Image (cartoon, rainbow over all chains, first blue to last red; front, side):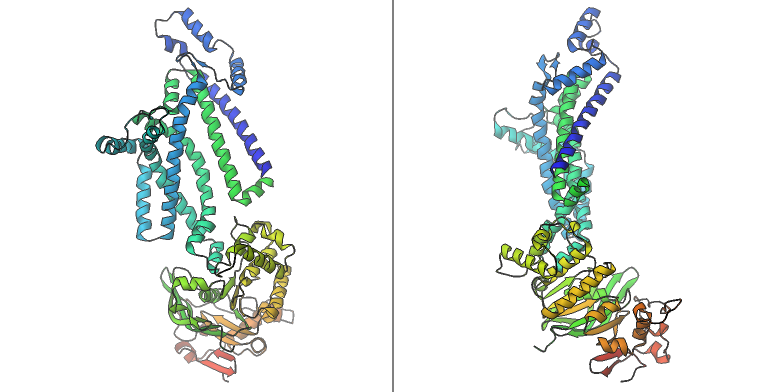
Length: 316
Length: 323
């Protein structure tokens, strides 16, 4: 297990490095000069040159890349000349908002999705199973921002139960918690259907396997068979997909964050790309990639923990 | 203790299949006494595995019992609720499955599963169940049972897994032990070892054993009595010695003639039984074996054959046999 863990983490570091190199290449291929964009059409060449120098853009590309990695390794992600703040500060301010949103969204989707999936398996072929099938597909097909708008309308505008915009007062946990409920609901709803379908499909496959018949032949109760014998195997593909899904949740968080006027990494990165604000773009992408890799690696390690066969394949 | 521990009377069972109902078991009657070993033999599709599944109440969702009863220890299974039937499994009746590769859950250790499999016994702590499982692993000839308890199924060889499966079935000393093709998935040396293990177990296990197999040699080695099945019916039943040396039903005789182990002389081609199994969605009105039978007469095609008692304990389902 330890060797497996070391290999997986080593692989993650290599991927992170490669992604950042590719990101650098892409940033320089996109047309548009940040200095002209920032200073407008009437800026003098001297002013532009000054700004370029302060952003480090006058250096050769290779030296810029080297400089970026060297300072990133010490925790310094550069300085944002627009907001006049270090990039890391901004990320640290915005990222927790998105992270809490994403984690809560996936968290409730996982609980509800696994529950509904198991329910459909226990009642397979019956009315409940069919209704859940229709419900799941409907949930998957509705975009998160549509759910967000209707949730806003019903719970914030009509019923006035929950706040409509913002992330709550900083430091006030109750108000922050209230502010995250609707966005998390909107963001996770589609995943409920997706996870329910996924769990149902893999559960049905597992329930047909011989070892389930063995467990039945020894008179184990059906609930125990479903939860201990089948779900442990059926959850494995779900964990793998969920880890990948977190990436997509973080990116679709942009829409939900926009609807609810919630500060987050999505709003930060879209603003930065529009302004060609390279240090912010690079810093944010680095953080997102690192975070994403942590999640995927954790999921892989978790799967190895759940399935002894995976460990052995890697041990070879 | 003279009454049968397992008694099946007139069991008739259908499967819903595309194009109608498949009559998998037709009027099957068998009884097994304590300490007895019954073999059930027949070619693929004869219904022997369905019969084994019916004994433990695990026929699929598409199966329907049309008629007949199954009694375990005098208790009619149909009179019980599904939950009560479940409470009997493992304790009164247990099963060893064909394929040891897939019979265990791949993500739980052997020890965890053998402990769980003692679900239907009350008042025994988990530690005691573990100790009992470990003792049983040692009993079926596995060296270092403590180590095996912590192993996952894929870490054991096929023979070791089949031993563990047999240990699992014996954990609660059930009154009836069913082994469905217990050696079919194993190679020849493993098969010999497992047969040897069953022979040993026969001596100190006092319940009844049912061994379902298409391998006539396994039955000759292990069983007291044998039931030969064809197209969902028991066509002949009797002591092993009588069936192997004085078989009366034409199907049994043909089956024996096809067993390579029974052929002494060198032959260029092994004998086969001509023709194929009848379509069990619409079984013929007369004898199911009539289209393939060398002794066939007119009434075989129209009238159901009688159950003829040949000698005490030896019977055959045929128009052409006489006591």
